[in-house]
View (cartoon, helix red, strand yellow):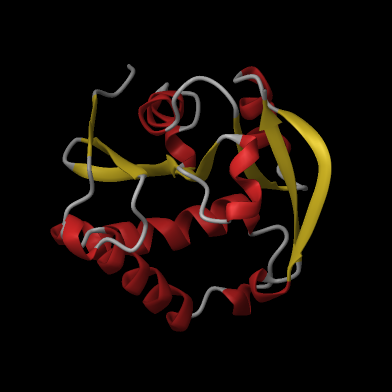
Length: 169
């Protein structure tokens, strides 16, 4: 049975569940790339701060032009996505930016990831960064018209994971 989902903007009351979900999704997506010591209380606290900032009233929002949506199933937040204007002016020529898309592993293949993607990223030129060693995510983005453009970046503060940029023209 396919679960029923609700999609909505995140609320301040979601901060804790989103922070916990964010770290859980990191563990599910990158656990084979990162040591267990990566998943500390400090990481969880950094996600709490991020989500407190992202759920602040619009007048206090640090990232104008961003759309963020969460997916709920049975009253529980199970995924989230964010996209919009690029945060780095040097990437503005690439179009809109998918800044994040995470869905609990037990909901992969449910359609929720595609619905979140569609809710935050309009059609047209866009780009995103994805872990180089994340073939499932890369396949999802290819189905949505993205291709690797050869640009990579090593995230030293994220366990040295190499990210690859994907673009859609």
